[in-house]
Every structure is written in C-alpha cells, then in structure tokens.
Length: 438
Image (tube, rainbow, N blue to C red; front, side, top):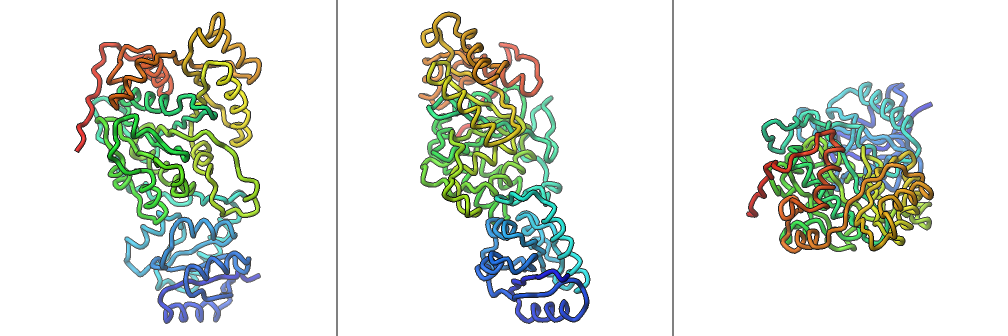
C-alpha cells in the first residue's frame, strides 16, 4: 500500500522534479496533492487524504502550532532544507521535526524518511492535542546559561527539575509559596528559574517589584512557536533577580491567555531544565476542559497551559488554606487534580495555619480532616504571618530578603531543603544579594 503524501515546497521547479522522481519509482509513496501554501496544506491534511507531508524550511508562517495541527490530523512531517543550511535545519528541529533532509537527497532517501516518520507518528499515544516536544532534542548542543556559584550543583543539559505550584480557587497563596520556594532554593545555592504561568493573570512580577518588565513567558512562547527559542534566548528573557534566581514574568491581563500555547510552553519547560537546576512554575487554579470544544482538538483551551505543566512536572505542590472553606476547596481540588492528571502524587501544602480559624490544635485538626476526606497523610504547614508577607510585597522583596526570621520564611526554607535533599540551612547563612535593576 502506498503512503499518500502532501508537498508544500516554496521552489515550484524543484518541487516538480521531486514529485516526478517519487512517482517514477516503486518507492512506497505517492503524492496526492501539491499544496500552494501552509493554509492549503493544513486544510488538505484535515480532510484525511494524506499520511505524510514534505515541506521546506522556508514555508511561510510555518510554526509549532501548524505542526501540531498536522500531528493531530495524523500527518507525519519530513522537512527539506537547502544543502548545508544549518540554520534552517536547526529551526526545523527546534520546531519538533525529527526527519530533516537536504533538498538534494535522492528520492529513495526521501521516501524512506517519509515511511519512517509515518511509523513513528502512529506509535505515539492517540491524544495528540499537543505536539510531543521529546521528538527532537535541540538542547544537546546547548550549554547552561545561568551563572554558577562556588559549591553549587552543576546543571547539565536536560537534568533540571520542574516543580509546579498549583492550588484550587480562592487565592490560597500559590504565588506566595512559589516565590518563597524559589527564593529559598536560590539561597541554598541551586540555580533556579521562577516562571509565572497563571493564565488568569500572573502577579509574580508585581510581588517581586518588577513592575516595568514585559511578560517574559509570552515572549518565550512566541519564540518557541516559531522555532527560535534556545537556552540563550530563554535566559535573556528571564529577569535575573540575584546570582541564582531568574524570573520569567507572566501575563498581567487575563485576556492574553491564548499567547501561552501548551505546545510552546512545553518547549519552554524543556529548555528550562537546561538552564536551571530547579524550575518553579506558578499556575492558575482551574483544571476544567471545555466540553463544548471537545469535538475540536485544535481549539484553544484556556487551561491547556496549566495541564501541560502539571503533566511535565516532577513535583506538584497543591496549596490550600487552613480554614474550613479553604480545606473544603482543597479536598475537592485534589480529586479534580487526580482526574485531570492521572497518576499525580501531589505534595500538599497547607498555607496560613492559625488557631483562630480552626478550633483546638489547628495542625492536628487539619491533618485529621485531610486524612479522612482526601486520604492525605503527609502535610507541609506554612504558618500565618500577615505582617511579614504584606511587608515583603509592599517593598517588592522576597521573605528571604525582607523577613529572614519570619515563621513563613522558615517553613519555606524547610520545604526547599526537603525538595532537593539538602540539609536545613543555618540561620547564619549569607543571603544572596539582589542584582540592581538596569
């Protein structure tokens, strides 16, 4: 059986020669349509007429979103680049195209690559709502971009960890925990990248006093979607707060959520593991998937970015508040989390622990409630300290900088140390100085 193939090549003369060469021999492929542009290619692929596409690197408006649409349509991609054009080949591989050949390759070589690409695509899971970012590894030739301090862990490409900070609706303190955790990891000497991926409007930049910064994450996602993001570009977009902490600021307006495409965000996270030992991601609360859009696998989904991060993260922190309303939301949220991301084993963090909201022994009562209603036996508690948290936000500093003796800061220290397997830090530890703006 012949594999039906689409072509979308900018050079019509060379394309005609390629089509003729493929049709002359018994190579196992047949060209069913020569598409005039990307829109024609996507429309034809959606009809189910083809199993593979041959496209040139200079195809106008080719980006990761377009390749995602082809993957969802069940169309494997083989890229063709001018002989010796390393930049074109690099861009295609960063977009996720595995099979890239020089345009002067023989018809036999190209047809074999088409068959290989089709076999590889059909072996992937059926849910291809986002393009697999592990098909190509553009990080192999990249080196860590974050500066290294003496006696801190070396960051090898692709070895960093991703920690997702999530919590149910009701402002349980996700950003407070994310910022505090990232600051403490940096204070322990771990190169850390803090990403604000809240699609309902991030506040990490405001919390840290970075009010003049444009959304770094949105810019990174745009570059990733165009195949132009690498470790150097990612580091350039992230604001360096101190020698071990960088921040990729989020969208300040909720209506900008379409800029955070899941497929692009996965690329950002993949590269983040090459430039930071730990990447902490602050997420939005909602895990719902729009049922009205279920028939359209390519329709933008507001919570797709949140789900993509949760699926990629090695560690998920589920943050709730220590009061009756907050605990009820946390119990329900944990059930929704396991349904949305099967197999996840979150670390539960109960924020704002205080005796005034829970009668009796607050910690014991909260533990008993979570054990009974959510099956959670291990809980990390963060005390309530309004003056310290408010004071830090007021001056745009972390608790590490503004309230080193706060119980909240000490809880964040212990949490950070437990995540990386480090000993509890000494109170005499020298704090990292913030890098001045400018």
